[in-house]
Length: 188
Image (tube, rainbow, N blue to C red):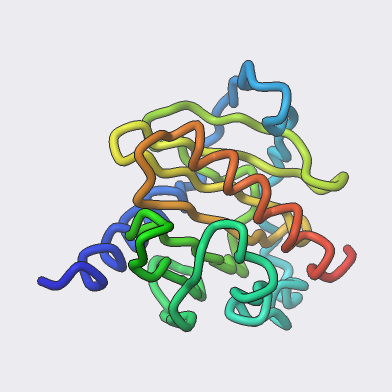
């Protein structure tokens, strides 16, 4: 299995684990003041109405050359549908100035909200990104982090960061990317 396939599988695993289920739980706020601090615990509405996220395309929410240049040079985005999400992921290219392997992904979940975010081993840090409900799920086993940002009360966008050495650094990158993506989301 080549490195790109392995990293894509890791991104898929992370996003699958982050999708959660419909069990209620209590999110513990993180100690990092830059972390989100308040979750939305509402469950998706099955009224038959389409969520606002349906109009979004994950590969259009980030422009690698403009938005991600501070993290290195990235390959073209790769689109896939998996684990209840429409996902676009970008892998950093190998070069002498950047550590290879970093993957930034954007996953759109049309029928899962922030309240369904699952703890993947590092707890849940809940709060807001630009006044939208958000939840952060660090995964210390893999040095990865997923940050979910509400689109409306039925849907969310997940920012996934994988292949970093430090989970805290991964969550910091997820926050930076979330602040870039959030203004591009439709208003509820």
